[in-house]
Image 1: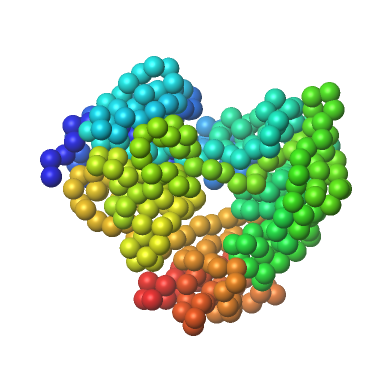
Image 2 (image 1 turned 120 degrees about the vertical axis):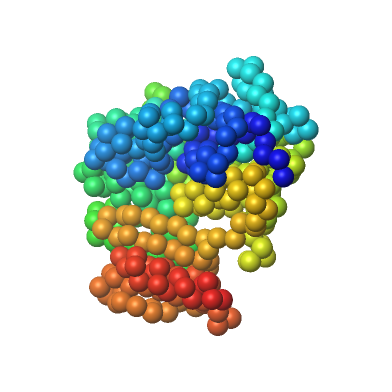
Length: 387
């Protein structure tokens, strides 16, 4: 296979940067362009809900690479110009400003966009948390807040609630699950997480859907639950999920179904690839279509994409992995953690809040969860690799 003369990466995300770095490590000497909707050079997103939001880190610390390292990649970064369309046959990306970028290979790494309430835009005190600018705006508002509500009981919502609580701001977490991450962890670990949040001072209002926001004079004053209750707040963080940023692909002819649909090589069409949160690909080992929203996958999938662009022709078959840090709990998940799986403790003790849990279906281990035992969880992960 002849290497492409020009690779265009759409998205200056962790996945986008990792694609460029992997291409260069593999000896690619051709032209590389990175197109980004944001004004910032690549930065890391996991610290946004923790270290950046809390103020422990200055924003610059979230940058993934220094200016000198980025310069050494010999890539052109086109910032503040979102992709607006893709001509697949020409491999041409049309930007919102009117640019047309043509390449031999295009990598879609546009990530996610936060879900929002209708009418949320322009309402003071209401925030999402996806970008660096989002984190800084939320922090600024929280510093003068008397009561915050986090709408969302998944990973991001729980992390934000823990951080806000640590900042000394009274905070309520609201959402439909019986406990944080219940639909991901199942009752044992989710119940323990609920206990942790409650002990640290988070007001949990779970088990009821949020139906809307209350405002007065253009500023949010509360959150409405389906029960009719209203949770007072002068800052609201909407964190009930995100959708793949694929709107710009609507007229491309590519298949989009909860992400850019790709084959086992992360290829959506000849010369078009997907990497990171936006990509749904066929996992040959699991025999399923997967889309993973985590930092580890962003890097590993980008490396696989770079290899396949250069002719490796290898399927991407990772063991799914994620982590979350909340208060003093460091939680790692390997494999598939079904909420209805049979769960058993294989290391440590739940009472000590240091344990490894195995998730089984039909007698087979499908996932491993480690709670403050990362090394032991990685060891038990080996059973997944043998399955």
